[in-house]
Amino acid sequence: MKKKILMIATGGTIASKETSEGLAPAISPNELLACVPEVAEACDVETVRPFNLDSTNVYAPHWLEIASIVERNYAAYDGFVVTHGTDTMAYTAAALSYLIQNSAKPVVLTGSQRSVYSRDTDARRNLSDAFLYCADSSAYGVRIVFDGSVILGTRAKKTRTRSFNAFSSIDFPAVAVMRDGRPLRYVSGSRPSGEPKFWHKLDRNVFVLKMIPGLRADIFDYLCRSCDGLVIESFGAGGLPDYEDGAFFKGLARFLALGKTAVLTTQAEHEGSSMDKYAVGRKLRSCGRVIEAGCMTLEAAVTKLMWVLALARGEEAEKLFYTPVEYDIF
Ligand code: ASP
Image (cartoon, rainbow, N blue to C red; front, side, top):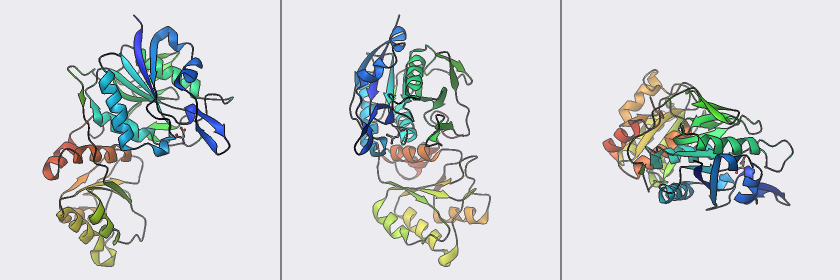
C-alpha cells in the first residue's frame, strides 16, 4: 500500500526563482513535485502552502501553524514533508520537536542550497530523499533530511552557507543516511507508542545574549524590562566576566529575582557547557536558579525555553527544561 503524505510547502531557496530583487520564493508545491517524478511511485502526495517565505521571516507563529496543520491532518496522512528555507530550518525543526511529541508518524523537513531549477541543484535529491524517507515504514518523529543525512530535529544546526552538506548533527550521530532512496539506519530508536501530544503555545519573549569580550552589563536593564527568558551564550565551558565590579552577576541576580528564567550555554559548537568547572562559571550559582543547557544546540535551547515558559515558571520550568525530549539533552 502506498503511503499518503502531506507536503507542507513554506518557501525557501528550494521554491525560489531569480527576481529583479534577488532570489525569492515563487515555485508552487506542484511544480516542485513535478521535478521528482520518482516520488509518485512510493507515495501519494497532497499539498498545502500555508505561507511562502524566505525562512529569515519564519518564527514562532509559523512554527505553531505548521504544528497545527500536522495536528489537524494527523489521522488522514501517514507522514508529513515540510519544505523550508535552510537558514532557520534548525530552529523550526527544534520547535516542532517540542510542539509535536511522541509522534509515531514522521514529520520530515527539507530544503536546498540551490533553487530547484538551477543547473547543479541539490533540491531534487533532498526532496526525493525526504519523501522516500517519510514513506519508509521505519520513519517517525521530527527529522531533517538533507544531503543524504537524516538528523534529529533537536540536534541539527546549519553549519555551511553554500555547500550541499549544510547541516550537521551536533554531538549526536545522524540517525540514518539515505542510500539509493532507502534509509540505512545508524541509530535505531524505538517508535513511540500511544497518541501523539501536540502543544499550542510558545513564549516569544526569549532573548539570546551572546557574550563578547568587554560587553557592558547595562544590557540587563533592557533584559529585565523586556524578556521572560534569557539564553546566555557564554565563552567556552561557561561563565560571566566579573569586571565592572561584578555588574554581570548583579544584573543576572536582578533578572532572576523578577521570577524570570536564565539558561547558560556556550558559543563553542561542540561538547556543551559546564558551569561548575571555573570560578567565573560557578559564581553564577550565587545569582539564583540558572539552568544549564549542557550539550543542547542553541536552536534547541531557545525553542525549548519558549515552549517551557508558555507552560511553567520557576522550579517547574527548570524541571521541564531538564526533561529530555528526543535526545535534546543528556
Ligand atoms: N534564505 C533562504 C531561506 O532560508 C536560504 C535557503 O533556503 O537555503 O529561506
